[in-house]
Image 1: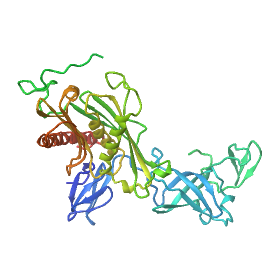
Image 2: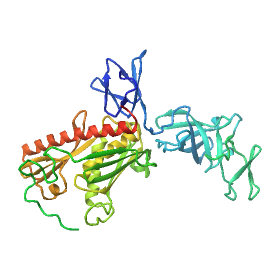
Image 3: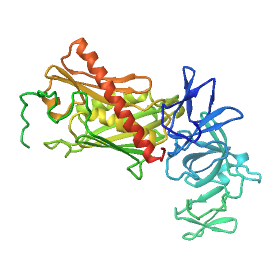
Image 4: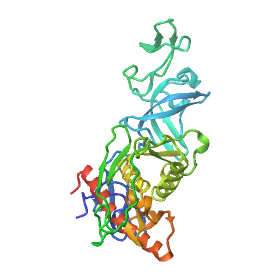
Amino acid sequence: MIDEKLVIPGEFLGTSEEFTGGKGTFERNGDVYSSITGKVSFEKKTRTIEVDPVTSSPPVPTHGDEIIGKIRSIKDQIALVNIDMLVGNEKREPAVSEVGAIHVSNVSEDYIDNVGDEFNKGDIVKAKVIVDKLGSIDLTTNEPQLGVVSARCTKCGSRLMKEGKKLVCKDCGNTENRKISSDFGKGV
Amino acid sequence: MAKKEKPDQFIDDQSKRIDGREINELREVNIEVGVLERADGSAYIELGDNKIIAAVYGPRELHPRHLQEPDRAIIRYKYSMASFSVGDRKRPGPGRRSKEISKVSKEALESAIFLEKYPKSVIDIFVEILESAAGTRTTCLTAASVALADAGIPMNDLVVSCAAGKVDDEIVLDINELEDNFGDADVPIAMKPNTEDITLLQMDGDLSRDELEKSIETAKQGCKILHEEQKKALKERYGGE
């Protein structure tokens, strides 16, 4: 039986009358082929055939994935984030070239006037993907484990420490406000 | 290094070649998958005395941004020979030859990869020749496509590559160093084994039309044998049958 068989790219799986090709497959001239190295899995009910990768796969952030990135610019309504890493897939660079965007309404539960009140350029944030359309990735930090995980003082540039609900600079005593993640300072 | 002399005959009375191979026999092949810890995908290949490492990184963000393609990924292929890979020291770095080989090899792989799945990204492929003994561009391609499969990049087929050549008016498969240097012609091809689409075809030397057709046919047979080796290597690494 074809189920559980290890296949390589370009290997013939069956005709499209037999199967509907799912993930890890492609169709050519009415036949279904594997496009990756992986194990075949066959769903009897829907007659869908898929290939589950046995290799590592290029990490593409999709809806619900948590990402870690650096704030690259702040506007009134929006903070733009460079997506640097997918949580749970730390070994590979994410396969995206788009920047993520956090809208003010998605920063936290509270009313926020200005994104700049909660984030600063250069902060490392953990955020969740809520929209992954081609060409735009929308992020949210409206969950306790999401938000800033590392930040530097805007006055002197040294690392900020968490004290209660604020961030304090140990060097110059400056206090700053952020949407802090519960994972703040625990390392990425 | 001592200069190698041209042999009196390339094919002896028993129709054996100078290294003892049959006319349509490949050199010994060995492919290993996943040899580099930090690369996204990698492969090591030995074909006769050729020793080559291929590494794949990406798809990843491409800088500078003006090189990005809005609807697909691009490939960067770097063919590079280590300075100690040949008899006399090779001056390291890119040259006219390696740049051209990189370009044609990149184009040979392009049609196999589903580039449209990763818009604006780049897939970096680096092949480093540690020891060379004729037929490196083809061997590099064979290794690079295994490394791409190891990186989990979706492809419609693996790419296999192999050369044929002409010595003593005879078409032979997978020419070795002496046959390359003193032989009459060299025809490297790359193809997608399942559809037999040819993605690279070069010719160095003079061949008649019939001889060229025979060379391509011979090289195709070699590609099929190499494809079995690629399959074997991937299945060995990921534990299938």
